[in-house]
Image (cartoon, rainbow, N blue to C red; front, side):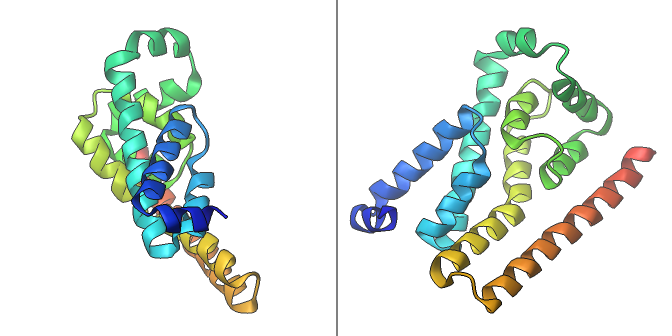
Length: 186
């Protein structure tokens, strides 16, 4: 039904999806659910592009809200919050490498990261660029899996693709973890 509505309304459907994604993310709704919906509705290619745009836009807005509008409230509210403190310490000690690490291996929920990074000294455009590039692999894989299941149902071929995607994500996570654990151990 949603696919039909979007195909009838074209750009309005895409804009509605992006707005829904942004609003949901600002209120800490998991973006992965929306990326999966994007894969089902838009297919792998367009779903990846539209979801990546929406995720980058929402993370940028959360970052800016934290940095310029809600900074004092967030600092007061989350002062002593272990996750926020870990992100701040990670940026202080490891700089941008910590941002790359936490985006590739989500130790903290992305939406919390978006606000937390707004409270750090990381430059806005660097944050946006790194966030966009590092969420691309996961966005593509979630979109691909959702699109394949929506188009073909559960078949042996789809199951093999899902297993392969899971293995690729696992391997990427392990490589990233090892590279950064060596770097952070120094």
